[in-house]
Structure formats: structure tokens, C-alpha cells
Length: 256
Image (tube, rainbow, N blue to C red; front, top):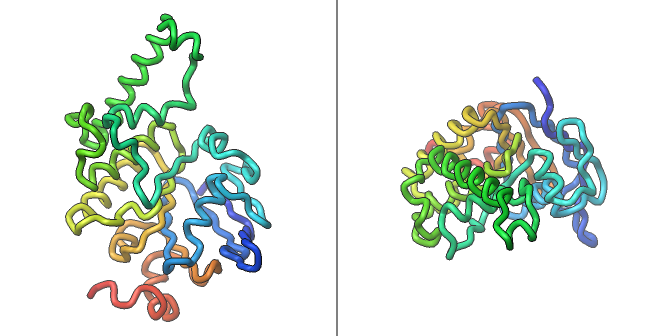
């Protein structure tokens, strides 16, 4: 199985605090990997290092065998990596369609001159992008809400719009930061099926952070556990589920 993401002993130090300490992980193609741990464990810091928002103090990160430490976030996006955020970051006063269109920004093939004069190149590219955005909205079953403002949507639908916008960048790998946060049980179940569907439809590799353990255990192929920036366990869901230290520290009784 081909390795998509390889984190090799990466460390992020803020003054005297090591938020992530010598963390290593290999994420293989077309799998759904889960990253769990309590608040403050370093999960989002890890995401920020992988996506270029933070530069590791030590260690290296490879994306499809290409070193990406030191690259700007937009460069990493152009290589085929996209992410969502724990707090949904949509443009509330823009339409659903306009929010998705922003995901195509790095693919623009025209400049400000074309925009001001509405040249044939501008018109052609805009038409293509709108068609592609509608296709993505259809993929997430929101085509009927394309012209609604993002602020008018339910929480679950806003999350889908954010994922559709990430898909607009054309990713090979998708990073989801607590996608089920704030959802009710029915929305969470729907999201789980949705993530499985987009994994298949877009041939994605997915790495996600999540606190809902039932969601993680039912969805993920492989799980790593962080505690104060250190990986304390890794394996298949059933292996992690049976790890006594993980059960005591994080999971409790997931069947409760």
C-alpha cells in the first residue's frame, strides 16, 4: 500500500512546552485514519504542521515522498492536500455556491485584467468553475440550496459545504478537524456515511481528528492516540479499543 503522508519524528515546541514531541505516523493510500486524544493533546497543532500553518521545530514531513516542511499552505494545497477546521469557517453572507467557488481560487487561469474587462478567458473559466461547483454540491446533496446564504443552513449542511469547498481544491488527501463536533446523533450518522461516500467517489485518503469515539471506531481503518503531544498507541480500531491505557485515559466504555 502506497504511503501518502509520512510524519517522521516531528516536534513542535513553544518556549519550554513541547506541544508535539517526536511524533511519527504513516498514512496509507485510500484509508481513513483517526487521531484521538483529550483537549490539549496536540492534535490540531499536528494538523497545522502538516498543512504548513506551523513549521515543526524538528522532524520531517513527506507528502507522496515530497518533503513539505517549509512550504506555504497554498503550496501544500496545490500538491493535493486540503483541510477543514474544528470551527466551521464559511463566508456567512455569501451563497453556498459562492463559498464552494472560493475553493477553486488557486486554479484560476485569468488575471485582474481579464476580470475587469470580462474577457472571453474570464467568461469561459467562470462557466467551468460554476459547473464544477454545482457538481460538488450535487455530490453532497445540496444542489437545491446553492443560492441560499451559508448562514441559513443547518449545522450539518454547513459542515458539508465546508467539505465541498475543500473538495474544490482537487485534493488527494483530506484532513478533517472534528467534523462531527456539534452534531446530533442523526447528523453524526449521516456524516459518517457521507465521509465514506466521498472517500470512494473522489478516491481520497482521509485523516481526521474526532472526540466522538463511536464515530471514530465505526469509521476509521486505523487510529493513533496522542497524550500531551506523545503518541501512546496506534493500530486498528479493535486494537486501540482493547488497549488498557487508552481505555482508562480516553475511551471509557464506548458502548455506554
